[in-house]
Length: 229
Image (cartoon, rainbow, N blue to C red; front, side, top):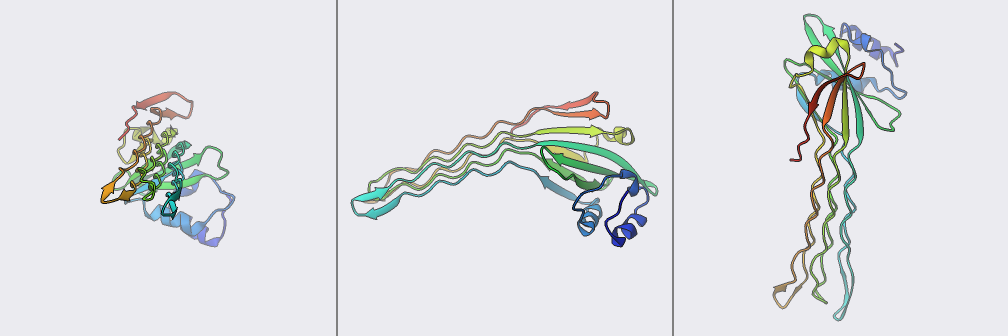
C-alpha cells in the first residue's frame, strides 16, 4: 500500500491489521481518515442523498393592479447507486469493520469504520426533497404554488468479503434508501383579510429497490425489503 505521508504511516502503526485493506485514493487526506477511524465506537450517519429540488419563485406584486407569476418547486433528485464493500480488520482482541463506499460514477472511494460491539453507522441513499412552492400574489389574489415531488431512493449494493461474513446480520451497519419528502406548498395571497390558500404539498418519492447483501462472488446472502418512512 502506498502511503500519502509519514503521518499516515504512524497512524497505521497504531492500528494493527488496518494496512490489510490495501486501498488508496488519488486525493487521500490522512487527517480525515484518522477522524473517521476514531469515530468507530460512535453512532454516526453517512448521507449520499439526491439533490434538493429547485425552490419556486414567489409571485412579484409590481403595482396595485399587476403581478408577475411565481412558480412551483422542482422535483428532488434520485438517490445515487452505491457500491459498499465490507471487510473485517483484526485489532488486538477485537474486530473493526471497514466500509468502503463508491457512488456510481465517482472517481474516489470513501472509507469508514465501525466497531460492531460499540458503534453503529447509518448509510443513506435517499431521494432528494422536493423544492418548496412560491407564494401567491396579494394583488391578483392567487393561491400559493405547489411544492415539488420528492425523489426516488437510490440503489445500495453491499458486498461482504470472506473476513466479514459473520457480520452480515450485524445491526452496526444500517442502510436506507427512502423516498424524498415532498416540498411544502407556498403561502396564498392575502386580500381584505382573506387568504387565497396554500399551494399543494409535493408527493413523497418512492423508496429505492430492496437492498441486497452479497458475498464477493455475487451470491445473495440477504435481501432487505424497501421501506418508505
